[in-house]
Length: 238
Image (cartoon, rainbow, N blue to C red):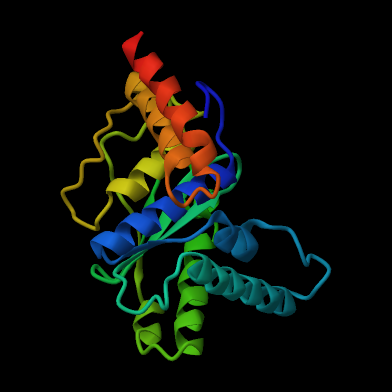
């Protein structure tokens, strides 16, 4: 979480655990899944020796298992009733977030980097949104939720955000965490960042590192809590 370095998938996953705990307490109808869900479904090169059909079948099984075990870890009984379902993506050295939004009936992409001129949507995002839409629909059907048919027809949208930038190559993970923290599916959305505001992003790195260390979901928070509080207090006073 230091300055000017990429963050690891585990950091984003830990933050998703914290967000799930917070949103469970606040009843915000939002749920956050780990990187593994999309990685196993779309990004991983595992099972390359299988046929295309068999490979996708195996990938869906891994996707379903990831969701099922994650819900157990988060003490969440079911995805039923949730309106925003967040799936962080790490592909080609870049983090972004896909959101299944049952309110707007869309699969939305939250990405701090805009499309480069001349690069089509399909080249950057491949068929990942379509695969997520289909796999999540299958998951709903498998678990007896009628919403599955509607999800199959959800529109895929790239959410426009004024703070997007092509000039920052290292903070995509922080942007992804901030987007998950602040997005509630509303058209008028401000995550509190501006394009290339490096001081604000540095502050967020510190804030998120602190939260992950001291939050109750961290099984070692008792070991880290006092040291972290002392350390960050000293930094703020400098």
